[in-house]
Image 1 (cartoon, rainbow, N blue to C red):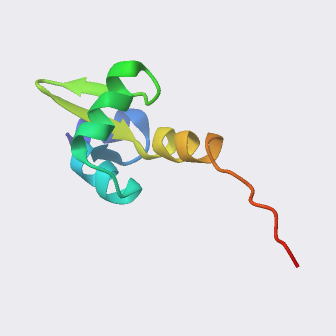
Image 2 (cartoon, rainbow, N blue to C red):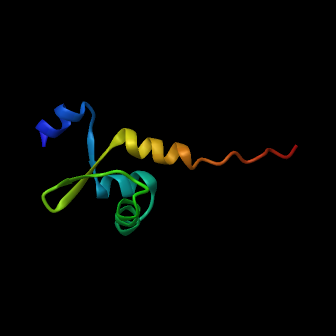
Length: 69
């Protein structure tokens, strides 16, 4: 696993870590991966996700809510 992190130059997160970070279920993360909305690296039977990919996904979906005075 350390070899993968060195190759990609950033921390690789598990599906569980991403789910916790996004406050969603593991199944939601798996659905996002399967639909192609969230990039992942397959390691054996498991997935690993780049922190930057998760942050990019969240940034792209951020919503600006107008402030009502």
